[in-house]
Each structure stands twice: as C-alpha cells, then as structure tokens.
Picture 1 (cartoon, rainbow, N blue to C red):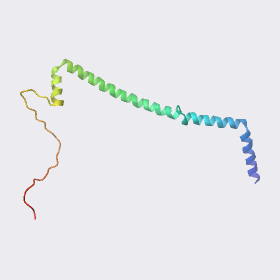
Picture 2 (cartoon, helix red, strand yellow):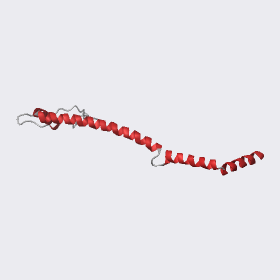
Picture 3 (cartoon, rainbow, N blue to C red):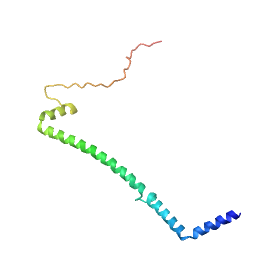
Picture 4 (cartoon, one colour):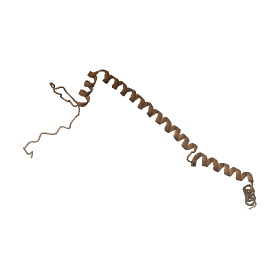
Length: 119
C-alpha cells in the first residue's frame, strides 16, 4: 500500500511539472506532423514514390513518342512505307490483287452431324 501511495505521489508530481507538459505537447506535435497531417512525413514519402513512378511512365511515353515521330518522318519521306502499313494493318489492296488472311487461331473441331441414330 505504501508503494502505491508513493507511485501516486510521483505521478502527481510529474503531472504538475512544467517539463512534463512540454514533453507531452512535443510528442503530440511530432505525432501530428509525422503521421496525421495532410503534409505529414508519411504522405511526403508516398508522394516521393508516386513521383518516381510518374517519371518512369514519362520515360516510357517519351520513348513511344520518339518512335512514333521517327515513323512519321519515314512515312513522309517514303510512300512505299505508307503502302506497307496500309496493307499490313488495314488490309487495303490494289485493284488487281486479292488478299487472303490466314489465321493461326485454333478452333474446336465439331463432330459431323449425321442423320443416323446410334443405339
């Protein structure tokens, strides 16, 4: 019982201490700034990761853009290249030729239907 009263007295003394109040306020401030605020450190690190991801996407899009620009220049210089793309992608043809599209798709073979009944 004596121990409990001494602990209680110590806690009350700490509670009334000015330094304890400053420590509590500092700890709450660090928690608020570090985790709970919109501009917290946690959100800051998430934003850094998002920026890195967007930079990577930007690089990919720039590479696609450069490839497309090179293809546009090639099409402007060489009319045969435009004809090749028109034939390959859009199945366009000249007046005197036929186009046969061969597919590699595998289809399920259906059995032939007959009029005979198997008993």
